[in-house]
Length: 258
Image 1 (cartoon, rainbow, N blue to C red):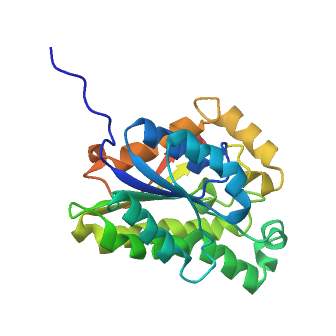
Image 2 (cartoon, rainbow, N blue to C red; image 1 turned 45 degrees about the vertical axis):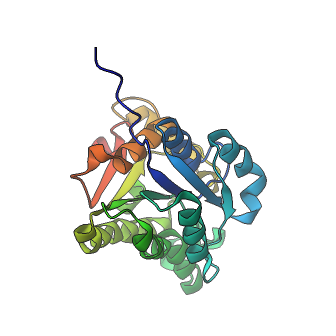
């Protein structure tokens, strides 16, 4: 009888950004990746340290502070993570933010400053992360993964300026995949359905959005953090070695019927 297969991410080294608390998407990704054998470093903003700490402790990972709006913060984070882990095999970017005044208003009325901050934090930080990770990724390549939403493809009511930011992010994924592919680096966006995270609670009428997704998705339910984490772990692993440049939905099929 053959022995059991090794964990899917055994010996893989990963950096996961954007842990807010145990209910965040980054937390779900961390828990699944650790269960699959990955060694991790996690990051969060300073305000989230008390809530992200238990997540890091549960997966046995160092927790580092990083605010992507601060010059040099991502460079310092990636260098520290690579030093602690002896290199990197994947990074998961689960960061998005927009000023409330711009998020809750019409895109037509959005301020230039608010729009630019949303694009910097939610989109361009992924390009910067890729640039910082590239020299630390294995000679065999690696995986870079970010989080999008259906509002990148469709005009979702009350999603506001995050829609254009996520649309730019999905386009960025394709360009990074093209540019980094010769190095064996694969780049993906995951597009989950609505999940009750702290970040999502900032959207207007988010409860109605979840109710609609639950009612109309072919699976008639919302997806779980574990299901999002399972997809992220698959994309970070060798089983997805032939895939790059995609936005992959994990939303109970809602995108197919919305």
